[in-house]
Length: 321
Ligand SMILES: [Fe+2]
Image (cartoon, rainbow, N blue to C red; front, side, top):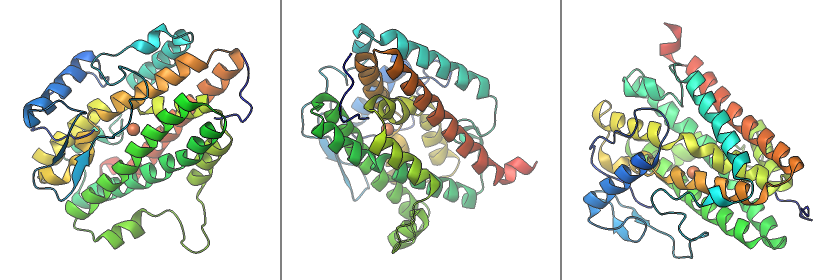
């Protein structure tokens, strides 16, 4: 297959705390998706993904994008269209590896992203606050560089990939705001203070951290299959554990619902971001060379994220016991 010249590399949530049982494992499946989507419908008496509405008690208005869906049907419950694409088997292999990784680490108190500790209320309030700041730092850095990847895909004439990156970037940009709402609403920080805490940059000399450089390089020089693997497919662990976190933040930490839009949205949105990754990889990752670089990028991203969780855990009181 021809190598691309310029190598390239909802809304709304907020359901009441009705239990979403799923399979009891960390992985979301079609039953989980059906349940979470139904929970949204019950709350809003509306079809998810097709409306705009004020969230009760929030100043903000959540809105779904006004653009064509990047791939027809990709947001429908149980969509598996990627399985018909040429490199589906390769994608299945990555997923299998990642499921194994999740299983291997599922007994660790910080895996994934401190979820078991939060569910048991074992983070102090200050620790929970730095957990949220840390999340905002990570999400704020890792996704924003996709703006560069978006432009590169446009220049290369890769319209479908461009539109998926655009959709992803748009949503992740909004999620940053949701994190700021969590920091200011639940933890009482001012917006300025939150911006200062979260910013990785020394404003003025634009000092980039190691993490910035990693994502900058990925989005500036990476092939788009690497970006799809490291940025989109990587997010597949998020929905089910975040649902548990959303419930614990309400029930254990007594954070009012109106500040919890970020965890609520993340109880489902990455079901679709995972699909963006599956689609791009299954369609375009058809040579040995591309599969090698995508696999390497995927594993590296998963392990980097895991190491971040472990490092954060070491700062916690719970790790000293
Ligand atoms: Fe995402």
